Amino acid sequence: MTLGLLRALKNAGHVVRSAKSGPDYIDPQFHAAATGRPCVNLDAWAMTNARIKSLASGYGDLIIEGAMGLFDGAPPNGKGSTADLARILDLPVILLVDAKAMSQSVAALVAGFAGFDARVRVAGVILNRVGSDRHALMLKTALAPLNIPVLGTIARRDDLSRPSRHLGLVQAGEMPDLDAFLDRAADIVARNVDLTALRALMAPSNWPADRPANVDPAQNPMRIAIAQDAAFSFTYPHMLADWARSGVTILSFSPLADDPVPDADRVFLPGGYPELYARQIASAKTFMQSLKNAAQTTDIYGECGGYMTLGETLIDGDGTAHKMAGLLGLTTSFKEPKLHLGYRTLQQRVPHSLIATASATNGFSAHEFHYATTLDAQGSALFDASDAQGTSLGPIGLIDGRVAGSFAHIIDRV
Image (tube, rainbow, N blue to C red; front, side, top):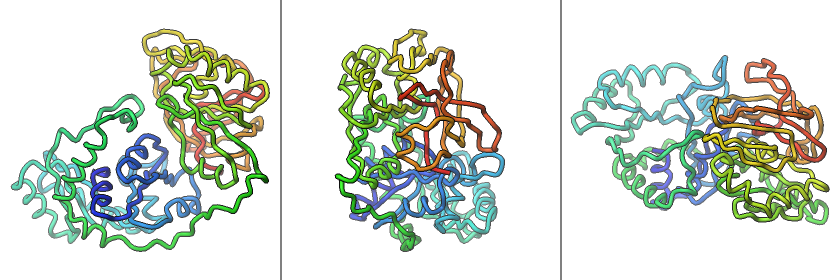
């Protein structure tokens, strides 16, 4: 629904921007494909209000896709929910209701959401997976007393589902039919949703934006090499923008293409799907040797998938062991996958220059989402971690000389 709406507005000639609630890496790739513009993450748990307002600022229509239910966030109080973003940014909410196997109960459902928190304005409803015209009429009749506009009804369409894997949707870059899918979804939305009424609910924003500084590259000639391909794709645009604002030059390379690590001042291996490409990564001799060479003189940092790649061994889901870079005393396995999920607060035990480049403090908000099991971790811990409720999780991550990493994805400073 979100993708169809974004592409429909773009096809209608509107300037449309998008954001995703929470720490999702995968959905923003689809948003960017739908609009042709970068999609940012807005995280009401991990980011300050000032950061959220700055990232949400800009010209054009802004549509934020929620995550889970409207009021669902981190325990114990739901902090970080889509409703939190609506309150922070004072934005109206369009409630997307899965109406399959539902008739008059839709009114109780919508009334419950609309009345749950007076600070959250449910300004319209879109009914999804509607069975027939008769079904649509029943739903609209039930909703009429609530005086909440029904902006559209979408019929059940099995052809609009997208394939998934263990961390979410199969990535946008791996779908050759994506553009045709987006146009098909946009056509359905344009024919069944009142886009004029939806746009009328929008209001100009007055949030302050972070303006790029006039940076003299000679004053900050730092270069950061970042792995970027299907195995290493989980990077937050706002973190890259932070580096760019400080004058850092980003050098991209592909371990899957067996590119050598560029000559740089820092090296960053982001998260992704190394477990799906473990054999290819292990056989990328040029990449592996250049990474080991870089570790002699350059600070290297890995998050989640990048962290596993810096380790000794990665065991895939079939139980096959693949030799990794051997720069950290880490062995991980997907043979018996176990979900690790949740927000984290991190305090650095040992400083590392690349992390300090992203944030001037030692405290970070972060997120962990993976299925890997740590079989062995030898060396000094990088962080002390706690969960969203403030419960200590003990030390996490490793650091050995210039090389460091952890399973946590850093989102912002605390």
